[in-house]
Image 1 (cartoon, rainbow, N blue to C red):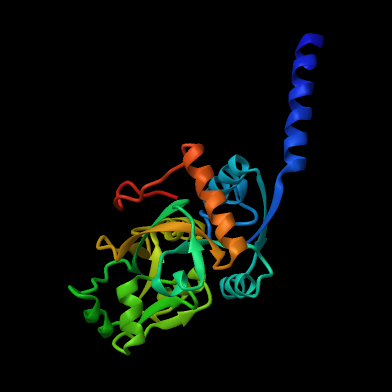
Image 2 (tube, helix red, strand yellow):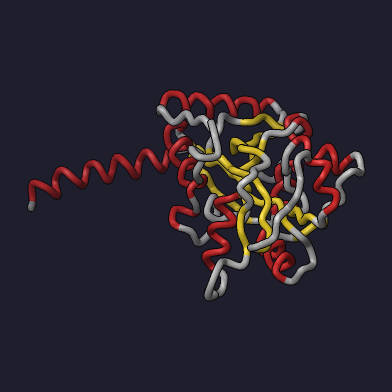
Length: 247
């Protein structure tokens, strides 16, 4: 026992010393289980991956959990050094450097069980009342059609609110990540028979998830450091298809 303790204690001292010398990295994020969440195991699957990458880069992430619109505000104001998780979009890339992928997200439509949404092109969805979370990127094409006034989605404060609105009949469907829907639906009151809500088989997109850093010299240095750690740590990720994608 004495020999074992003698071996363990130096390792613990070394670990604490390395942690003490890690450079703090202030990142803002949101409650978006199972990807991120203050009370989740390891604060979510994507948070765990970001921590692993930061450890490889000699960084110590300090996460602030905020409403999504404030996450963006804090990053834009420079009150945090970056934020995650984010989908790639032209508009966001004008403001931020995007890291290599740190996760994958399958995006589709959630609707009531037994209801069929009849659509071939995204324009066809104009016939339905669709819920979207205010401030979220959905898909490039979907958001372009919204900007053009072809689609008129109903803004929701959260994915959870969107599900409640579907159940109440206030909207026909909501744009949502598949893993998020599965997590939230598992928290809903159990019912007999088929589930009240389902995730449609026809998906809208498979997104990669990224950490975003402001387009400043400091932000450029951080994203390069972060990406080097992904490569050197063998932590590269490819979001190939909806079947392979998981949080």
